[in-house]
Length: 449
Image (cartoon, rainbow, N blue to C red; front, side):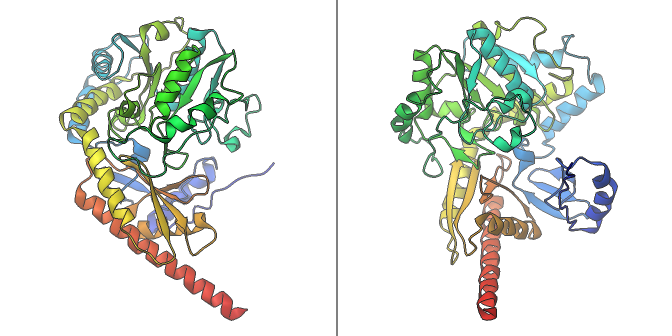
């Protein structure tokens, strides 16, 4: 049996101490390969164990849509924690009732229902059950590049085959529907385009028309897939074709929901009404809460006790969720994300780094900067070096994409223009330094030859 280990390579005295404490006992599937141990966060800033400050472009994988420790969210958490921290799904509580009512006001159905869960993966498991119960069919199809979680059911619609390697009962059929990608970062108000042209390709796919297909699950921007935005018009095409076949259109809005793409939900850009929506991440303001939402006739198909969870709709997380929704709407955070995303993209497109070509992709503040050309043939390794240099300069970002050559921008939606500009300045310096190092290495190799 092979024992796997991450190469944590601690980059600070404090991290070396932490690594010595936890690495011997922590499973290798979870590890710190970034080299930072975070201890505190406020707004767009986080601090490590050594007291060093960073501009955080990750927002906890998109969770902190309002920044770390937003005053209104923090106050709501503290007040609820002082009153009642947990009772269980079997008991009603005011916090759950308030969030249920509040969330229903932003959903697209006239008579919505909500199935509360704890995590995004759990909510995907739940939506698969709802789809099968409501249609009497068994198969839900995913898309190339799609990611919906690593639990067994979610893996049936997650495209990365490596994640299914240890789960032999997970079927692999239905994971190859083409995902038409927008050619670049989608600007606010983009008109339907390539999605219409690709509708027939999906329609003709052998998996699409099967009699046992309950529905399709799709992301409007593929986060784990490298910040690839769906081509404008794709959702409209999917809505039309699924409706004609009695299939459900399921939107995974775990990452894209609550303003991230420049609208409250990603499907709002095309004025499409999905059948079911999966929600999570930003809703809890840093605490785990997730949900399946849809019309009463679909959510009501799942029999009592078929889907429950100990920590679902935890009162403290629900209190945070109400505060998050209040701030998102009163401060018009989705609109801010649209404007900020365009500012970021314009700045990235203006960069000129010898030997490097960049592409801005995504939508709103779910933006990727793809290294399309670099002095190194291994663009993933080059990008890793860029992210490391950004970290050393005090800016935290994550990589993504199949080749690891996409730098992700998923900061808090209320990030200032000054911080956005700073992030691009640091990116430019990191690109220049990494490109220069690559050129020096190539020169040394030629001299040796």
